[in-house]
Length: 434
Image (cartoon, rainbow, N blue to C red; front, side, top):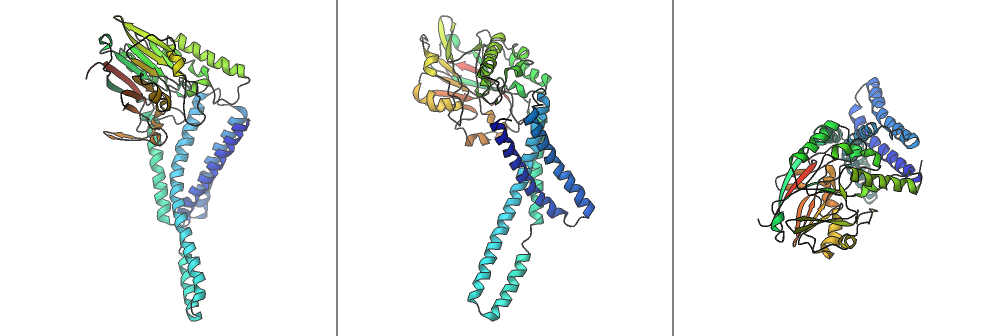
């Protein structure tokens, strides 16, 4: 077990124990009037789940038995995520109750020490009153019940997100007005998908429904903006034939995302093995008929007019994300084109590099955020935890004369579902005028 795996394992163990201990306090409160046998059955049933989770996790870290069974891995992660997000909500309720009780105990401690300022005759009376009040500071049954009910809500929503949200592809149509667009490209349809993460898929028929939706749009240009796999290229083996059906008369263009490089795999046998994995992914794109742009450009010509598609490798300004993207290199040797469309996986690249330094880029297409796979989108109301991490996390943004579109992603990662923020296929219509 590598150093990173050891740290991650013990971090998860600590998280599981803390959450389960806290939630158990709420359950104990509600069991206090039950029979001893009933309490014992509930106790054994409750603690069996975290023990099994930790045993399976330990076995995976030692023997890697999920490597040959990605469906088992997906469902294990799903159960873990759903159960412990729900328990965490309950634990927060119990924590609030404990904070309340702590403040009450502190207040009574202060009152007790103020007794020295009172007359001896009053002291016995006050001590008796404080002792009575302190005995009343027990865990509230109301808080315990409220916490368990609140914990049930994410369990229901997250379970529903797996069964109904994971493959509920949404077709979004966006009209883009680009004043300098040549008339030859006026009305051209450009389709974007992003973040396939085919290593997470478990339903071939459902994925193919999404592929059919893409094909039915008959877009002249298709852009894929990174993260075709989760970690290893062999995840694409059973899916590349399906995605190779995506064709476009002006070309299918693709780039790499942060997950495509294999950087999150900790047990590569050698640097050469990791490099071979990446080169195999290059071959997958080529065999699918996709033009993989690695800090490169491609000029589309129509009626002697030009439109430039530029694609860069991943560049992110959060954490340890790769900074391989090089816009200047992608532009090198590029003939003049009135409209330039950039494919860059991480929207922070637009914020930090493209928008301030490359004003000639008319439109940037990104993905990466997945919209957190969780949030609310109702009319003009849009919220997701992504907005606290990324300034631009979903949909179309206009900054001065430059546009950024952040796709919500075609697939999913970690949690095998979506709640509120559904998988997306975007169809842009390029217009010279509104």
